[in-house]
Length: 77
Image (tube, rainbow, N blue to C red; front, side, top):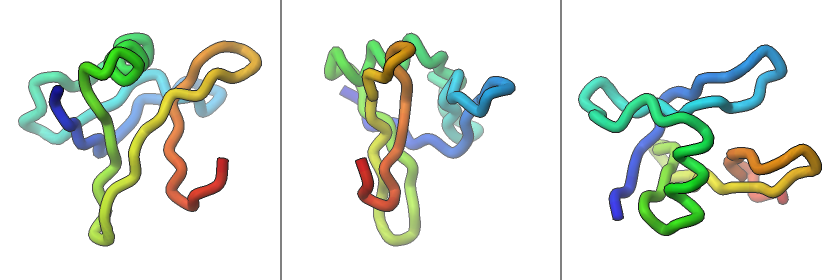
């Protein structure tokens, strides 16, 4: 399992995350939402946002219109 740092995201016109993007040398980037969700749920890869004070995991949420990606930087669910 690879631990993948995310520095940018692709978003649609509604602001929903459509892809995760790593740094300039990340050969996996960009990773589409569907593939990233499968990676996380399958335990294949983890994705996180790095901060000077630590890191924030990117989680899969099962919402009313389907699964989506979200971080919980402030700890709220």
